[in-house]
Image: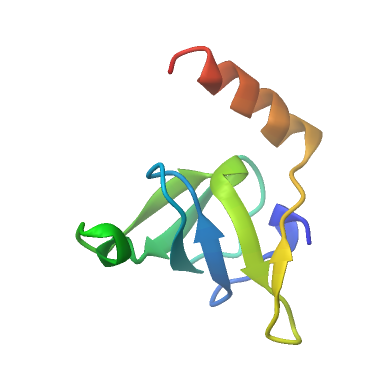
Amino acid sequence: MKTNDIKKGTEVITNQLGSNVTGIMQDNMRGNTRIIETHCSEIGMFDETGSIYAFNIVKAKNDRDEWEMVEHTPAQLKLKSKVAQFI
């Protein structure tokens, strides 16, 4: 599944906090950033809604209710390498 195919309401797994957490997609946008409701309480933090880089989306549930790996676009992968330079 491609990040641009993930629709609002889809369950996702993200890694922007350093650990994998689940969340719910909150937009139908495309591109390098997306809005999700993150279940940070899974790792002892507060749940919140906000933007993340699309390359931080690891998996998404498909129409068969199965977790599927997410494929990132070349532009998203390029941004990921640029961001990595600052970490």
